[in-house]
Image (cartoon, rainbow, N blue to C red; front, top):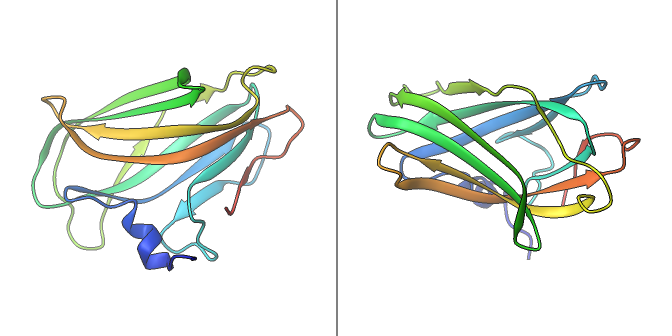
Length: 158
């Protein structure tokens, strides 16, 4: 049974943090890959298709709720058969709650995907946000499809 956009958006919200949206740009391609609360149609899960060996940039928009978060950190792991093939970590530092309608923006340094027969395919990924004591305050799952070099980047609407 298909879920409503409001139900899907709840997957990206927690007690302390909401993911408002993000976009990915891929070197050599003009079009941004974007996920936001206002997408139409709204995909059931985040599923990015990116060419192997591409260099990409990630910009994340998020809202902090309730209380300040000390030393907020982001960790992403992409796995194949349970083995990490790509990880990424970024520290955001101390962040304050947002006023209504406002959000924080995190701009990541460019990164390059691995490639080759072993890494091609659709892989589960997990993004985890933690605070200073290492306590996880929010995590969500998504998918990345690493395709051959000549495939155009896209957001798959699963």
